[in-house]
Image (cartoon, rainbow, N blue to C red; front, side):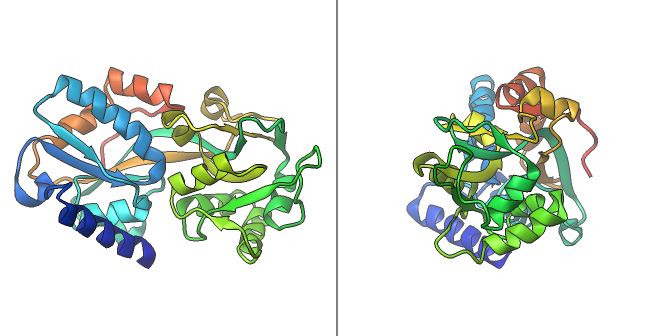
Length: 284
């Protein structure tokens, strides 16, 4: 968490010094501007959402900053540095301050990804445990398998560890294997998978779809991570995506943008980017 906060502070300061971002509306009362960031998995779809929204509302500028992670996005909203935080995990108890709203907008497949050119179709959960434990280092065709990791505190590593006790233990072991690449952000990880022959790593269906990444999701126990399988529960591994914002904001553009996410056009964008759209519930 400390690394995420330091990264957030560095990013915001760098952008301000470079003159590329003004103080967000929630901080200075200005109108017609929204600043959004958080988990890298949601950056691509929110850029598409912002583009569609601005075509209807040309008086509003929606700025999507580079990823600072779920924790960084939540922290930035709490500190009034940005308007909307994007998170691939629920708020932690210590983050649930009065007036902070958490709204889920969709579910997306948690995938074990490989390059699209890889002929591999999938693994069993037991085989995936073996990959993370360092016991399996080749694909079924015998070619080298190169594991791409995420930081142990990252939401994706936490989700991976929640699937089975065996995967939790294997993920711990994987971080002791020398020479493995650790993707600090979602974009770092998918870029490494794309460019590394034989790469294998965890990511989300929505980042692959929204950023048109050359990655495919592997089947797990014979079930492919398609949207229909995620929706039906046949593929049980998925993450719920959240928007985080302050109820007491003075920015008049915030609520209309969040409303747009749940509109027919917003829901269509979610469907096109491998989300299972969720019905809106009252934000907490």
